Length: 533
Image (cartoon, rainbow, N blue to C red; front, side, top):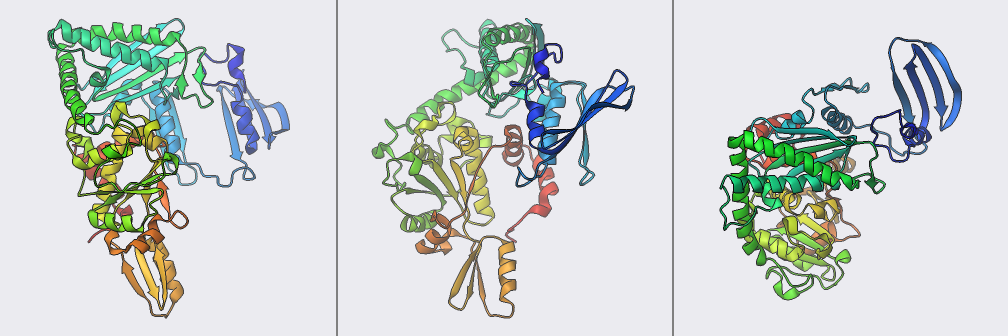
């Protein structure tokens, strides 16, 4: 702990306070350290933070390096479970960010193992993230430089999607909230592409400059900076604050990208043409977007006609139920608590936003109704503070169609209202799958497992089972009792734990390419539940 403060221990470090090892030690039942250096092996053991054996020589070795072994303390953690998936994702990330580094991961519980080794570094990283997308140029753009004790690496590869994916790192830490390195990159990218488009007459004199939003449509990019004295904002280190990095990053990208565009005119033309198409669509979307705007967040006159709103004026207490179909919408309207529960019925399936630009998306009546009802805008204009509801509950039938509608809605929220998801405002209702009746007693069950346990406990008794496929099969009282009553209901909160994984899943399931989807179905077929066969 505190190795970063010596000045010579690390070239760069992601640590802020120098207490990493000390914290792990404090939270462990025991921790062992084995250090190989100077042809000797040194060893020390701690238990619950206290020294058990002093640092001593244990033997000799020609190898160098440190091995830390620890066991999390079950007196502190209620549940101890290491996720192979989470660890493998992070180690893969580190192997991309440190090209040539080889990392071995082995799960001794199952024997599962993986080796991470990427000689191409962040070039391979971008290719990996684009593997299920149609790319505009097969070879990623790679820019690297070292200025003022700071190493810069940028890798860019455009695809034909309508979304932007920009991932930034500082000293191997994923800066999910961006920072000065991201600001510098975005500024340089916009300037370079506009300058090139003007120079080559791809943008006419009377045409407006391309916006940052335009030039980043279809962008997949990794920015990695290694800086000696990082200034992170906040305890979680998700935003980089070094003011000098904005200008330095801008310079590196400006110089490198200008040369690349001049030397690769075919790729440059494809990138500019995509941005010009995005600009035209943006203008069409702006006109469509005006239809969904209101003067203020609580102005009821501009709300969609089919919305049954709630009476409470406080968004923190308000819930919006997005209900599949008019029939179920009617039941939900009658069964709700109108003080704080609003109902918006959705007719049919909304457009798949993964395959459409914003102007086309805004042409969909159901999407316009949702945007207007929520009241916080869409895309780059989205303002979380204007959301009229802090719980938006997706309530669909418990069949394949219902699952599809739910996925379409989640894709829309993730792509165009992501702050809503990140803030934990999006939920999925859990209507019952079964009603079991035994005599006068009625029991609602929410899974096949619950059904098996319940019917087993009835033994030889007579009972009837009703399988609910549609919300419309329940009357308003049943819908309130099972699915909408805050005292009784179960609702699942939607979270984004891993933005890269989420992006890949939405691309695979909802994107243009069929083959990755087929592979996904083959891989996960045995996990399928509630099939309509």
